[in-house]
Length: 145
Image (cartoon, rainbow, N blue to C red; front, side):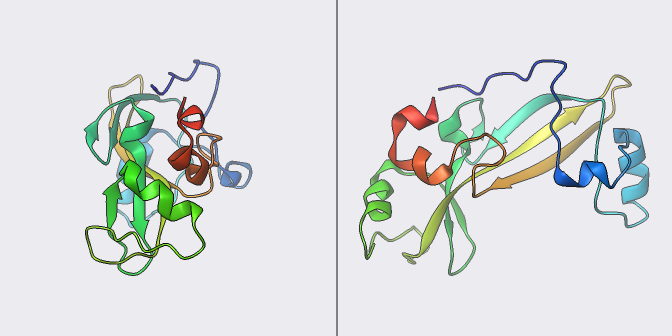
């Protein structure tokens, strides 16, 4: 399954967009050097996606297992899906822990009309970003479509 490009009239938005005025990427770059960390960015295109297994537009490349004990993140292994469906999972991650949750993790390179770029990180454990619950995507191939 591949991530579909967003139509030009659709915006990626957060709940903070109502409270914060949108800024351009060049404004983000200059204000970040002053310590500003939260931004609502406007007027950009997503020029590159990088998932846990590298640059790809595949849903499988952004689905990860996130360790709840140590915080390490691993590319999703289909063998872990049985651990999500049993009452007491004992499927260990490479870090040795067995308490984990699936999440979408990726970085996006955003580019504006002037050629400025910024890289942003996305972590979605509830399914807000793609509209698909990562726990459902982890166990159901149809959810990853």
